[in-house]
Amino acid sequence: MEFEILYAIQGMHNAVLDSLMLFFTTLGEGGILWIAISLILVISNKTRKCGLAMMGAMALSFLLGNLIIKNIVQRARPCTLDPTVKLLIKLPWDYSFPSGHTLNGFTAATVIFCYYKRWGVLAYVGAAIIAFSRMYLFVHFPTDILGGIILGIADGVLMYKIIQKVYKKGGSAGTVLDLK
Image (cartoon, rainbow, N blue to C red; front, side):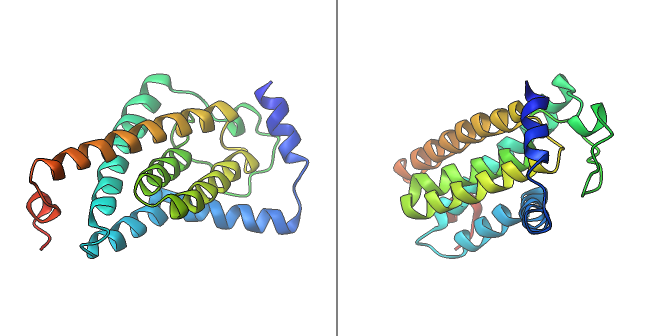
């Protein structure tokens, strides 16, 4: 059934969507968009908690998703199982489950949403487009995306709660990372 979904998405290809999906997948590459946002947020005292929570949550997601779960599950990518579909990007070198692009996006978006609802909704839209781009580009199965969403939301909420507890116990962002 997952291949049926991916093949249906392949039927959507056109020059405009190809360019858009390549743009969005590049934004999600290595979590660079979300890392940049977290660094910007850490600069200001007003948004520092959110930035720190994003950094911590993304580190947790990288550890759990990319280093542990991907290597335990070792799921092949759809493009390696069906090499007849022409790739628009270079073949990714790691395993498929969970989608790292999706994991980073939903981790970051969840943290942003916990602090700033309106910006969080926008971040979720961006994360969803990046996630869709991975299926469009035929490098992830729908369940890879779903796994990234679930783990990302869980990691984001967990780190949000941890940072909230650190601040309630009298800690500050400055004492956590000596940024003052």
